[in-house]
Length: 131
Image (cartoon, rainbow, N blue to C red; front, side, top):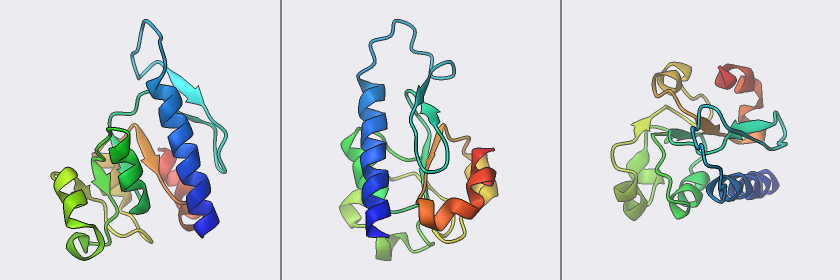
């Protein structure tokens, strides 16, 4: 699990660093995708604006990159599981349920550009998340 988390964090950092360093004249995020090979697919938006995280460990990484998630799988226990300083920074996010069983309806309602998940935990719902 720890290895998967490290790999996904490195992948996320690589993708977002590459996306942030793009010098394209036309930066319409709906037209541009970055090809990244990960365990379950290979494309992500170049400049994601609406990001949902399904593992709490990814929140800090996103905040460090200047991205505030619009949705978080907080197990419906945000105050117990998320540091109060981090909670202040992500104020206004939508809970998308639990990490083990995120709500596909809530995720879809947020219209995310990017969903960051754990390969091991979310592999079975990957096809639903792609929609």
